[in-house]
Amino acid sequence: MIEVKNLYKRYDDNFVLNDVSVKFEQGKCNLIIGRSGSGKTVLLKSIVGLIETDEGEIWYDDQKFSHLDAVSKQNIRKEMGMLFQGAALFDSLTVEENVLFPLDMFTSYSRGEKLDRVNFCLEKVKVSKTNKLYPAELSGGMKKRVAIARAMALNPRYLFCDEPNSGLDPETGIVIDNLIKEITEEFNMTTIINSHDMNSVLEIGDKVVFIYKGCKCWEGTRKDILKTDNEALNNFVFATRLARQIKS
Image 1: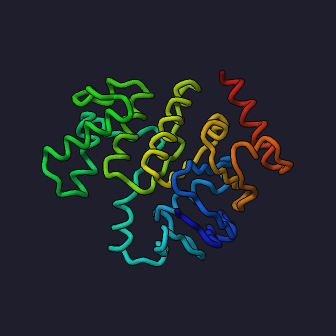
Image 2: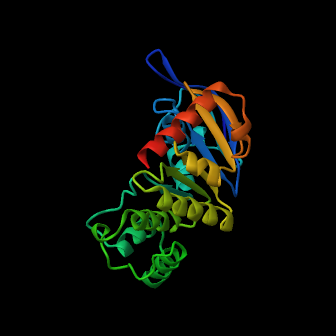
């Protein structure tokens, strides 16, 4: 479980996060949604320690991450998997080398053990036998699968995904969503997904947190979101689904 308590982040006199408190549940897909500029990206970056908040606490299970020293934070980061927007694979490395990268950085496994782990992860995301291909030889959906394999490489307890469906068609996006949900449940990870895609919310939103003007404006499940009377959330849902229909 990851919990944030009373987070504040200001830029000059502007509150980007204003007293945000929320628990993200283990074994569940926790989605942070909101308009551009709402504060959801700042919240995600604060949770992983890329942004220092002005006030508040961030807990990883029983450890107060926001108050740890650099070495202790690094130990927790070894238990994090990251799926970046656009996959962010290294273009000059093969698929195998991309997935090997965190294993080379953070483990002392033998070469054979590392390759076994690479092949396990690639098979788990259904892109086995792509080891020697380069990112330029992959489709958008396959790149995301490889990025998920890389995020899984260290067998993380916590998985963070920033707009995992960015640049994908709706059908491929649903496949990626279901893959993330599958590995979240299988490995009992605490998964936090930053998204504005209502398809993702309705497919895999075990818990949904709506950020509006820097505040936590609503939280619930994907079932709850369709019957809420929260005006700001309803406006967001309608606008997002309309934009998706226009693009399609």
